[in-house]
Length: 375
Image 1 (cartoon, rainbow, N blue to C red):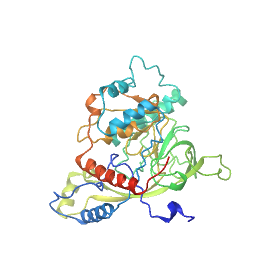
Image 2: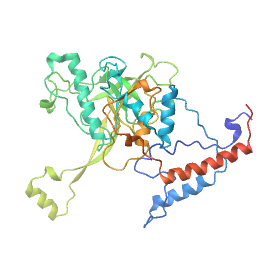
Image 3: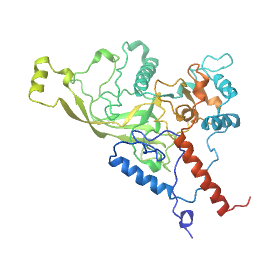
Image 4: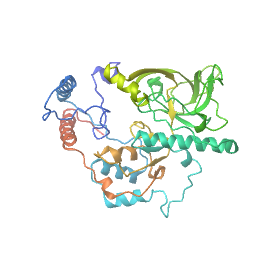
C-alpha cells in the first residue's frame, strides 16, 4: 500500500519526562484528589481514557542529537534520576571559570551562544543588556545610555519598544510557517528593517536610549536570516534563508488604577468603573535572543549554550535540569554559568511519570512479541 505507515493510524507523542504543558496538566496527571471538576478536568479525563486504549506502542529510543557518547550516558542517567557523582564532576568541568576550561567568551562560537534561563524577567534584562553591548561595540563613542528594559511576557510578547541592531540574534514569537521551520521559538539573525517613514515628531523617553537611536513607528517588515529554514530556494530579490517577517496584531489588558489620581481613583471605585483598558498593538513578532527561557528553547538543537543549573525557588521537576542540558550534541558545546550543587542532578521522575512510563513499557514489550523483527 502506497500510504504513510501502510495506512495504519499512528499517534506520535513526545517524552513524558520533558516539560509539562504550559498552564495545563500532562496526560498522566491524576485527578483522583480533585475536589471540584471543571470543563477542562472532564476534557482531560476523556483524553486519558482515549490514550489508555492504545494497545500497540513502538518506542523510538535512539538519541539522534547527541554525538558525544559519554555525554549521552550522562543525559540518560539524568533522565532516569540516577546521576552519579562522576556525572556531577564532569559537568563541573564546564562551569565558567573552571581551571581547565580553556575557552574565550569573546570569540565564536561562544560569543553567539544563547543563555538558557528559567524566568522571563531575567531573560528580558539579559537581552536588553546584550543589545546595548552589541550597539556599544558598533558605535561606542556615540552611545551613553542603556537601552530600555521592558518585560514582554505580560503583553503577548509584543513589547512597546523592540530594540534591533543588525547582526543580533532574534526569536520568533509566533508560528509563521511551521512546515518550513518558522515556528514559535525559532532563532534567526536580524539583517534589516523595512519601514514607511522615520517619524521625528513622536515623543519618546529618550533618556533611556542611546543618543543616535532611530525611533520607527511604522515598520513594514523585518528581514531575518533563518539558517534552519526549509525553503528550497530563496525568495525573489532576497538571498537564500532571508525571510521577511511582517507585523502581527495582539490584544491585551492593562490596569491603569495605579496611574489615576487619588480623587479619580475614589470616584471610579464609587461608580464601580473598571480601571482595566484593552490595548491592541501591531508589532513585529520578534524578541532579542541573546537569552532564551528553557521553555522557548523546546525542540531546538543549539550549537553552543550557556546554562544555569542553580534552579530558582519553588518546585523543581526533572526537566528543569535535564531539558536544558539536552539541547547540545556534545559536552564541549556546554558552558555552565556558575557552580551548582549535586542535588540538582538528583531529581527523580514523579510517581505519575513512572507509572505511565511503566504502563507504556509493558505495551512496548507486548508489541515486540506481537511484531518480532529480524536484524
